[in-house]
Image (cartoon, rainbow, N blue to C red):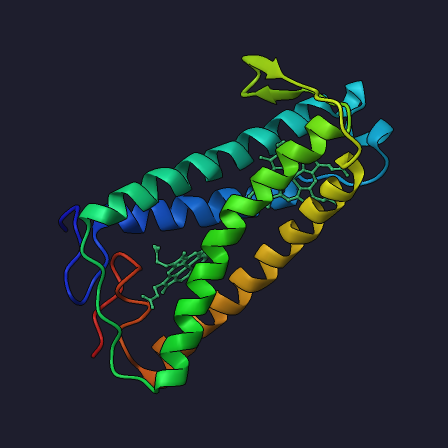
Length: 182
Ligand code: HEM
Ligand code: HEM
């Protein structure tokens, strides 16, 4: 399989970025903790928060690298489908990309303006900065974190629907090893 895509299949790099991102988002969500800041930022929960934040930052870097690679990559054409379905699929992909940016961005701003430093992979911390928007931004971060999971679930269900019911190549063009359908 080549690094770049073809008219009917995503390349191996785009596939790797996609599935790694999906896995990291899922784990970041599963280890996320809510509650009052005294709980979130407590000494006892510091390792979990560091893991959550590190996974989230990695998702962000993967998005940047993936978008740069996309400039040089070939993206498969959509198989024949009604126009509304193609528009819905494009809109979902755009929304997922926007969330992959907005979820980490609101997290960082929420922490900084809520009076907490942000630790980057345990290597060093930046912030906090003075401001009053910390709490609402942290709240928005949690909500967007929930939304990305719901939207990804819907997106996954649509991909399976394409494969099983419509029997087109939408899932097989992203999943290595899956036999190619029309
Ligand atoms: C794809 C990446 C991420 C996802 C899916 C995600 C998801 C979530 C969710 C769902 C919550 C709320 C938990 C609850 O209320 O039960 C949360 C909280 C939190 N996340 Fe993330 N997050 C991500 C990335 C990040 C990053 C990069 C940071 C780095 C600063 C971060 C820092 C936090 C903090 C500090 C909280 C607690 C907020 C508070 O209530 O004060 N997250 N995250
Ligand atoms: C957090 C989880 C996920 C995110 C953020 C996500 C995001 C995306 C994005 C942005 C694309 C557009 C192509 C690209 O830029 O690479 C895409 C394509 C795709 N995703 Fe996901 N995805 C997730 C999970 C899943 C899951 C669980 C499945 C399947 C069970 C799936 C199946 C697909 C398929 C089949 C395509 C190609 C669709 C097409 O070409 O029309 N994704 N995904």
